[in-house]
Image (cartoon, rainbow over all chains, first blue to last red):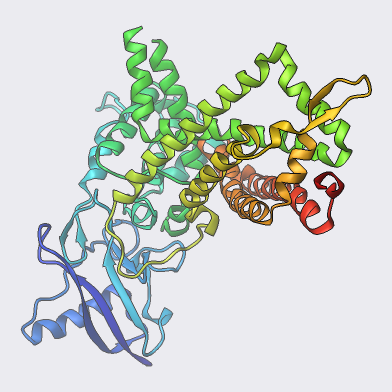
Length: 253
Length: 238
């Protein structure tokens, strides 16, 4: 099996308050069949053996559905490969002798916890501000009780594919969270169950997004290009439209 | 009333609200450019046609029309610049820079919007002082004698003389180049920010935006180029 010798430039940061810095590591004899996270596991094993502090990073499912792995690889969240998370990236995409820059997802609204681990609870607070529907739980309604046109169901499902990883924020030149917020709002706004709280949802989520200190969208669509679930920036257009309508209705009610 | 004023300020303080203000004022300015260009191209129709147009602008609604347009445009322009600067300042402070920076698909024009915009701002101040206020020039004394013996301002000669100065023409062309860049991202952005862009319309909107930018660009630069390179109307300078 071919082995790679790589140079890693990794962001190391003790805690949220300390100044971070780029450190250089040699990643020797990395199998091309390893995933990117397994490559860091190998490097960490060696660091631990040498009595050094391993590189801290977030990971969980390692199959592209949890959205935990939050790394910017050569300046692009989840790497330049389209439609994948970092855990789905394989080392065969790199060549021998390459230098790889690994940094955390950067945004003031995502403070670094340690090394490559960032705190994305600002996303949770945006969801709490309106990314839900209020329903009586307990007995499940009949599946066909509410008819949903196929195009609406498809559009809602496309938006619902968002795993909340934050790559959109990390890629945006302005650290804007518009793709995330628009996907979460669009998911419910496309469905009949989401109509009752639609205006309240849109106004609330946007207000919380602004309070968290995310930047403003400048329509460059870097978010769309890095989204591991390939969510379209047309959801952002829908959020803009829904926000305008919600603000207008709010001002006359 | 109070509650609705409150929602108006919440709108103007929100990121999307501010962007919508920038988009709507931008749309007004984009439409003004089309009108301004159409009028300006009358220069090629000759002195009489161009001066008729200039006279019409100053006499529409008994002279009030030009002031309504000026005040409206100034309001749009100030709001457009003011809210863009607010948004850009927030954007610059929203993150620390990456040690290794990369861009995946953002077009170059979108990355320099604030700089192309500020250059256009500087240009417009110069342009107004030059042709509207006519500061430091004798353009106000240019008169066209009409067949009935009366006189009117010779705007046609003013443009020819104005662009005969290579420095003025070069600054104009540089500003128009940046305007073209600004429009190629700006026009498409209006659709996105107003919520009119979808997967289906994204392609046509991008094409429309680029074509509009190029038409405006070629239209505007044709005037100084014709004067400077081909000596259009140069008998007027003598």
